Image (cartoon, rainbow, N blue to C red; front, side):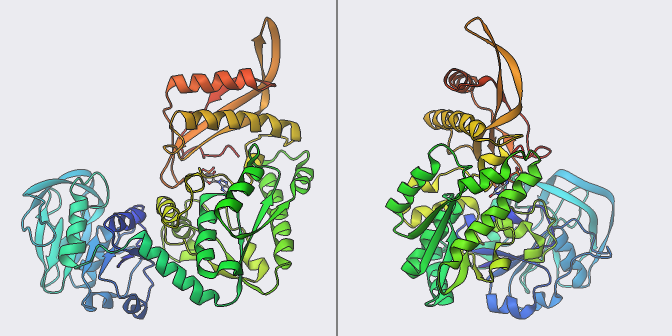
Length: 509
Ligand code: XMP
């Protein structure tokens, strides 16, 4: 395995992904990780990430320089390389000219790292400081016009540095350089597979839970379903899942899920229909944050009440994913800036005094899908698009009433049918409809109408942190619009959302 020390670069997850794509396990750790922990993790190599700080900045992140004496190969990238150089006695100074963007990299010495790269290649630079003097024992291996020390190495100590970013697409041969580090320098084996991960995870859950009971909130989404199956394979009937119907689900969702979950997951599931509670509490509430708070609070109360009925439960399982962990600084302690606070876990564990089990916390979404498949789960569960906890409650702008829910459900159902029929369901991160709190004038069969407006949102994304509106074919959009207006009473206009995240968000509320 490889440990990535997180110096705060926006590309850290990408480094982890690049490593795992090579079937080598990789974990991101904060700079304040102690040497004993690193020794215990026993990595084959360490990557020091880039970061926005200057090495001389007041609060610039540092890691224990003893890391260079462990005999473990280290690759420093950008700030990571500068940290290495500074820590080992070289010099880093403010560059006369900031280097940002593409640069032509001239390879001076092939060595293990630049194997199969050729004599020159394009690389992506993004730095304000530059190395002006290498530490003793290091030699330059590549340079660009503005950066004489674009790459350096100390072969004897297995220390390597790259001033540019090999992990980004803009460095076309970056993947090869990282592969060279993993296999030529660190001697990693390509043995990290989902099967191995599942086996190890099941063993760990068995060990952690022992003969205690585990509770899991099941939403029908990919993450919680995969978590359920994994834990079930570890501890069988000691797992109880709770499914809360909040009345804000899609058309026939609760009933359909009940069938799929019962049929495919032979797991204890308690279904609680709390629709009335939620809808009563939402009456007249239009403020998005208030809606979220009400829905979150009632969910917690209902879940808590149900969980209390399960005797001897010691653990609460959650389908937290790796991006959630990396993004929420409090959970992680690293300097990677908080981009969003994640919505799923608001306070549940603290209140319930249960110990947490989060078996997916080192996986990315697409890896969770592979894991689900590995565990034998059906496509229809593994390939569901994400659906927010507050459900249609935050897709009905303004008042959430049974009547408006019924309109949106029909619209949403048509949309998903068409998206699936045209083969777009898996290609899109999410596709859904939003009911606006406005009406517009239309004409239907010579009659003036004054009805609801629907906005269609379809986005592509890797992890929901950023998203782009999907360029759906006009023919598909036309079909969707046509069917909605013809088939759903109360809608006379459909608009397509062409905003990206940022600056918009995926959901409208
Ligand atoms: P935004 O709207 O912040 O959404 O761009 C990012 C992703 O998170 C989902 N989302 C939620 N998921 N509870 C959830 O479980 C929530 O309260 C919630 N709000 C947004 C959203 O669907 C998108 O995938």
